[in-house]
Image 1 (tube, rainbow, N blue to C red):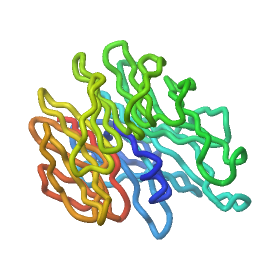
Image 2 (image 1 turned 90 degrees about the vertical axis):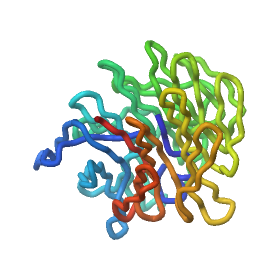
Image 3 (image 1 turned 45 degrees about the horizontal axis):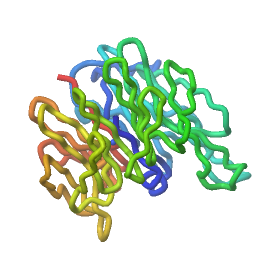
Length: 317
């Protein structure tokens, strides 16, 4: 599934597939359960505080821990369970930056993912049967200064940490049968074995039958063949529905223009916008993105969700 890359993260202090909850299930204990609907994960900018949010059919549910900021990057609904991946950050007065913890929420309950270095981010979550996979990366600013550099790609399975060799980041995870695919940087891992890609920023992986698709930079990679996406600077998310292939992204050569690509044809969604995630269900095309406000498009009809970003969309019929 989709995840948000370091470029996007740097723009708005944070790091595009999706989450569910009943309209009345966000009680005092913060627990959330799944169900049918349109789910969007991201954050709201609340007077300078970043509130991690799950929207269902426009209603926002906040997952913020008291005293911290956070963002949700990816959401997956499996039966009655809702899984959300993201990270919390708290101001570090010594380094004058945000100290980050990779977080997985299940039904609104927060879990800090284990790490071997100082900080980590969780970018993508995928559930297959009883197994929960989270892709992300960890780093230690003390090793290289205050910036996010010298990172290590990580895959967590059921909370257990695994280093993805040869990689610096992991932005997307997808499970097909018994095979686990992870994309990030110029790498694609299948069951932990790395393959180099001719893409500098692999942001999203999707598997359909025997076909493996990876979107990143301005390209779509399929089974070893790379296709340039006209008008794209960043391809953030890929989704396959039947014989149709969709890619969401943007062109930021001037003002950022959110774009949707389908089977070779590119469509502009809106100026000054970025498209971070795409999901297709029953012929309806949903795109999550941002213009400074969190945005959801359904079949080109734009809906504003509030100040912040919509980073992941998932639909349960």
